[in-house]
Length: 123
Image (cartoon, rainbow, N blue to C red; front, side, top):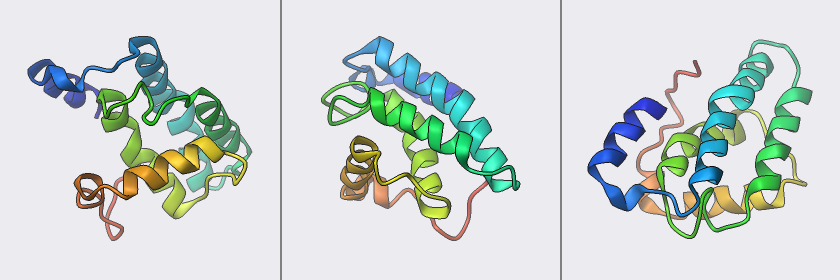
């Protein structure tokens, strides 16, 4: 999905992140450690690694969005996956920034209309 989002972003400069380094880290983390740990949790490998990956994401959130004060490509890549993790697994309660971020995202009809609880391909 990150390749598709990058292509769309090339056509819509308003999706450029305020903090390119934060965006790159979030996308890399979501596509790498977070996805790997999520897959392991879903297939019975336990949730300790997922919780660690979520805590790492939580620690990096210092704005309203993942890479600044406005919605960017980092959010477009990571938000659907993070939402699904929260819905079907869990986000540790101590991940206050991540939970606040997800609450904020779900309050926007532009996001809540794009996710479906009844169908999802994890991998």
